[in-house]
Length: 207
Image (cartoon, rainbow, N blue to C red):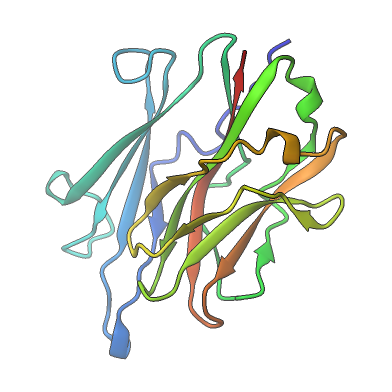
């Protein structure tokens, strides 16, 4: 039987990533808007339209002339593709720790890859951002049941604007074949520098 989770934050109007500037100047915010996308030419089975840009006039609203990127996160076909969103609560997640931080909210509890019959590949995706382009933002899936990272799930970005990243390796066989609490570990490339991630998801492809 097909199992799909829904996006807990898909109807929130605006999600914010705050970038920083040097010497204490007031920086411009990089804004993200989420808009439900109906089934149609952009997403055959519907999904989410992700609109992003820099708040040039600093009014906290992403206006039409400030939009820089538009991407679509689409739902899968009825049988061949399953997109599972982590339970985002409407805000970006951040850390300043180089040693890493595992959030206790963004967790798929009792996730078991065995429940997805005929799965032959899987990838992990998220939007990443750093407050300093010389410091990387890094995330990976994390097995919270056994307290170990999941191999081949690392995503990295040095962008000071939200950047969509996805894994290139198929980590299907790196997942335990038993139920686990599947979380996300975020690391800053330098202690004290804030980094972010947002809208994490895994996509399972079936034969």
